[in-house]
Length: 195
Image 1 (spheres, rainbow, N blue to C red):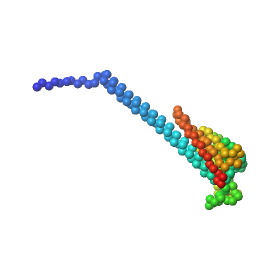
Image 2 (cartoon, rainbow, N blue to C red):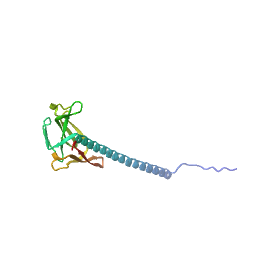
Image 3 (tube, rainbow, N blue to C red):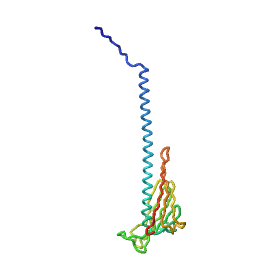
C-alpha cells in the first residue's frame, strides 16, 4: 500500500490576517456592548438615586408638615440672623414644642423652615428654631433634607399661605452624567395637623 503524505506548511499570511481581523471584530463588538451596558447602568443607577432622594425629601416634608399646626407668613430666626417668609421658595411651619418624653407642650411652639440652603440652591434645608426657653426638647439646627435639586416650588391651597391647611412641593431633581442629564420630577402635598 502506498501512503499519500501531505505536507503541511502552516497558515498563509492571508489566513492569519483574516483570523486576526475576525478576532479584532469580535473584541470590538464585545467592548461596544460593555460600554453601552455601563452607560445604561450608570443612567439607571443615577435615576434610582434621584427617585430615592425625591422620595426622602417628600417624606421629610410630609413628616414635618403633619406635625405642624399652622403655616406662618414669616418668622425671624434669631440664631441665624435671618427672617424667612412663606412663599414659592420657602415654607415656615409652626409646630408644638415637645418635652423630653415627646409630648406637646401646651401653648409653646417651635418653628421649622424649609428653604434653599444658603450658598447652595441645589439643596433644601430644614431649619429648626426651637423654643428652648419654653422647655422644648428640640434644638436649633439646620440639616439638608434634599440634594441634587434642579428646581422646586412650594404651593399653598390659599393665596395667603398662613391660612392654607396644606403645603405642596413640586420638585425636579437633576444629576449630570458624562453626556447625559438625568431628571426626576415629584409632586406631593402634605396636610397640616388638625386642619
